[in-house]
Length: 608
Image (cartoon, rainbow, N blue to C red):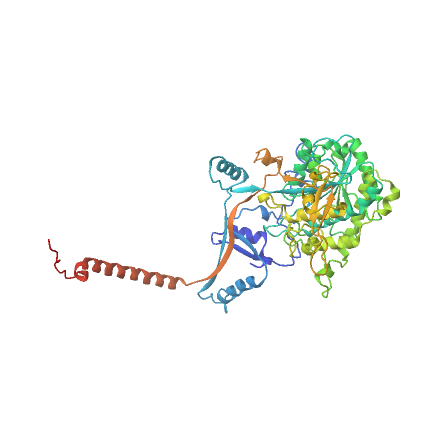
């Protein structure tokens, strides 16, 4: 199927047909002009802050339909496999097989043999998460060799703070107040391995990384009154997995700080399509009914608006917050906060959570004569726009943390850094990560994918690792520790693994192709991004995400030619005839065996 036909109406017709055994969609580099979003029109509506008990008039997107192009295709249950195919040489073979054997010629039906394709995608999971996890738990309890049917979606959040926090001591920190700057790490689309999320995720990751780099040296030179806490949440596309876990840990004194330590929060939403237009500062109208919260949010808005000469606006005072991690904090207590976005009401992103949300959609184009290395340094308009937003974010959270205004002009994001990150996280992670990541990091040479996936064998999602190492390089300190000491810093006098994390990174590549690794000490840490529902074994939870992914053995496909029914019947008839003749011959030989196989025996010459 060509991508142009991959629509909800077409797929629903196929779902209701008994003649469809599988679908293979050829991926297109450009999306339909009218837009395409397989997500719902009200993302994460059941796990956000607005319910019948909190802002019921805003629940279920009654006030604002955030994703009007959402068709809900990702939430349909299809009984047949659906594959995505790249438009490459192998796909051309499939296409040629179809065109040679299955195309109608001059209005007549195609002639046999016909080209056929078989898709193999057997999933072990059944029904829903409750059923699947219950059966998995039963196998784990009573089977000698248990076979898991499904696993919860999980990975790690990435966080760091300007002033290091003792990670070995959980719960409330006395005399510690933090301003949180947050972004999400993940995205999704209809297909398992395709989640480019350029506007939905990459723009916010790049902006927050650039803001951290711009802010960090000034915050060390002139520390603000409050600590600044940067965090990247994983699994937000699936009912806020990462943020709900961090809030849960804060509530239960399992995190490095608790909710009493949180002063305010600034979240970066979708901002990639600003292109010189206004940014919108979204706040929660329900919590702002509290006089104290409203006063703090108002001051926060003024702080953001005065940080840089950008066009900033507020939506209607009665408009709900857009889907955001901030909502999970508000479910517990009225934390003052803002969400920056490029949309006033409905998303400007026409390809929200789809395979078309790519760098091309953000008009990230390069001159044809540039090499991949040169493209990493080419300053696009999108990168320049994000640089302005990163500067705004850095100055805003510095002021919100109590920093002095006289240092604000020293906080400016670097356009070259934003260009590197924006190109890297969209197109060339391998090139971007060369100097910053661990020698064993599996950086892709193709555009990274932002689907959270599973954490099997204690692995960490590659994008999570990249953000961790890049953040450590930007905010950390190069030490003189060797590799052994870097991996076991507790044995080194003067080093503290409770306050810092230690990363052994590749270092720059020399002329002869070798690298010079070194050890970086930073306050960058990982924390679990696993829904609390799976620790509470509440697989049918209405409070937390319960997304799981099925186990499978192989996903593959094959093409072959199918003979005509007449040839098949003739082949069957010949086979039956050969079988009957074989039976008759076998019976005849068996009945005459004594005559056919007898031999004259000579009497033995035995003497007694």
